[in-house]
Amino acid sequence: MDFNMKKLASDAGIFFTRAVQFTEEKFGQAEKTELDAHFESLLARADSTKNWTEKILRQTEVLLQPNPSARVEEFLYEKLDRKVPSRVANGELLAQYMAEAASELGPTTPYGKTLIKVAEAEKRLGAAERDFIHTASINFLTPLRNFLEGDWKTISKERRLLQNRRLDLDASKARLKKAKAAEAKATTVPDFQETRPRNYILSASASATLEDTCRPPSWAEWKEDYPGGWRRPCFFLVPLNPSLTLARGCLSLPKDGKLWNDEVDKAEQELRVAQTEFDRQAEVTRLLLEGISSTHVNHLRCLHEFVESQTTYYAQCYRHMLDLQKQLGRFPGTFVGTTEPTSPPLSSTSPTTAAATMPMGPSVADLAPPGEAALHLEEVAPPASGTRKARVLYDYEAADSSELALLADELITVYSLPGMDPDWLIGERGNKKGKVPVTYLELLS
Image 1 (cartoon, rainbow, N blue to C red):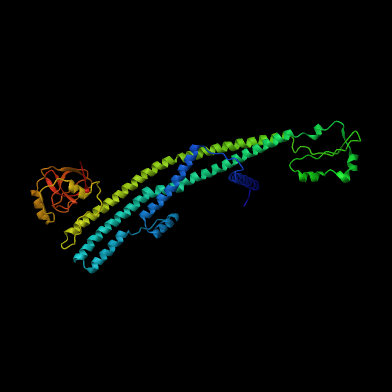
Image 2 (cartoon, rainbow, N blue to C red):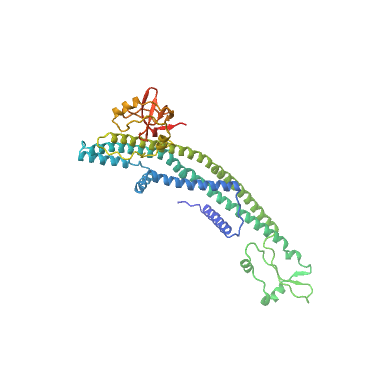
């Protein structure tokens, strides 16, 4: 492989410079360019969005798939870019066991018939659960994953580039500051060759006479002790008056003023380039961070879809269980439990409260056979104290002639009878009359 050694050395030098700048900033030995308050708020909002999105995503996955082993399996299939095999829902598996048990224990017995009916309901519940998981995964989980694996990775990459550009900018500022300080110091130090007295002359014999006691250092020694541009030391100087003490040679300036001016100009040019690159990268990062607002709008839409799919799922479950409860209640000899509502109603008014606040009419035998109940309902008149209007929330199919079929969003007249199950009301629509479930209604004031 052909390596570009110059580029490798340049990259290593840049990395070392950034590391030095970062370390000095941590120890408080270097100045740091601070971002404006609005930019810092954008960074904080982006970090908060990322953290909460991860938590919501993980907990939603737990809600949809409580089995950790199944979640790990789905994760591996996703990383391998393979289709996740369909998995039987828990309700469907329970339905299968119940159906097999009914077949073996006797499908004609009361227990066997009940097992078959419950198995059918559990199978419908399992299918509804699988549809809900599929819909929630597409409409809610997938957008959250796309944000974390796509948009957030892009934002993180640009933030790292911005951090590097900031370190380069601060390092350029530090170099310019040191160059100006050195230039100012150099201008204050006098040059011996320009300020020496005019009665000093170069004397090679004087240098030979004092060689043993005060030999000036060699050029190699000066270069080793004072690297970086020191000029060769001057010869010994001796005054014209022999009675005066011999003068020893001296060092000249490390660099003259012109060289330091070149260093300052070079540092200023590097600072301008670093400032331009930093401003450009800051603008790119700012645009990406401001795009978090669009991400929030997208996640809000996905959240609405998740709530709608969850509402549909629970409404389907409630209807399936309500139908099963009716079927079990019509079986002869079937145990019927308490008449308290087994599921929370979809309307804001509870069945018990709704029945208690309804006008009371004449008494009717609520537990009579369907034919007898229908006969009594036809003879029942609305209470004299008045009735209430109700809006139908969902379609409802009457199980027998004593019930009234309903269509969603239609308005009907309802009232209660003494001794009725609190989950039911008497509904009238035109010349039709029958029992209606309270949970399918929204009572209007």
